[in-house]
Length: 296
Ligand SMILES: NC(=O)c1ccc[n+]([C@@H]2O[C@H](COP(=O)([O-])OP(=O)(O)OC[C@H]3O[C@@H](n4cnc5c(N)ncnc54)[C@H](OP(=O)(O)O)[C@@H]3O)[C@@H](O)[C@H]2O)c1
Image (tube, rainbow, N blue to C red):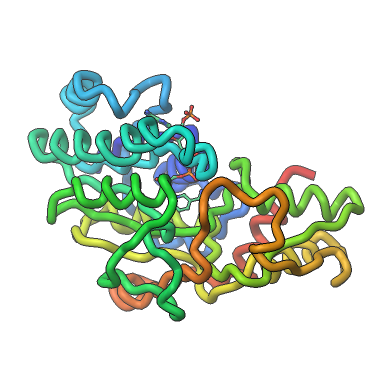
């Protein structure tokens, strides 16, 4: 099974290459990953520099040269607030390039798996989102990811995930842990609820899907949901801080206001994935591994 991973130097990409190679990334769980034992993946991870996914000639060249069975696309323009002022770049990387990759995979007889986001939803449902709920993105980033989904074919596999925290990423989780360890305090919103996803756990799900890509849309996240306030409190606790580390505020009181609107409640219902494969660990247990995996 030969797997080509694009965007391999991103936070999810680095963990995925480790997992496919049979290594346990920092913050990962050998136990959770054990279902992949005995599966032999040949992995080619390419960074933005190696393969710009907006360049169709380079995609064709890579597929002809590498001849993968499966392509897992992790390349994306993920700067959610910056995307508001750079919509053309967001569309090119998050939408047009996904279409190019999907087409090229079809021509070269490779299966295609690509990542999407809870930001395709407006957050007004008032309950967790299932795969069949209608997207209504409000941010440029969310719109571009939804457009990318729409450029996929029925045989492609779309994995929507959310609030990803990778030990090697520049994530909010890392900022919270740094502040907790340096004795500072933080303010986090009480009125945004979502699903935390520790990158190493997500990549076990991605590797499992790569074994026999099912096609269609799948929600994948750690079990349970939380507000950002609860996530910050939990990371503070794991770093040895007590409750006064985090002050809860409302989104409307954030100063400055973020450029991109965030969904109020966009936790992902993962029942479809859980019933077909397995449940990802509870978000608190996953966060404890994430914090434990961070450099001292
Ligand atoms: N992070 C989250 O909270 C989150 C939530 C939901 C879904 N997702 C999705 O999960 C996937 C992986 O995200 P991540 O968190 O690993 O993001 P990341 O750390 O920002 O990684 C994205 C990678 O894509 C690369 N890239 C950007 N433009 C490219 C291009 N034109 N060609 C090839 N590569 C390009 C980036 O390289 P450079 O940095 O060198 O440009 C970077 O290495 C993405 O599809 C993202 O939308 C993430």
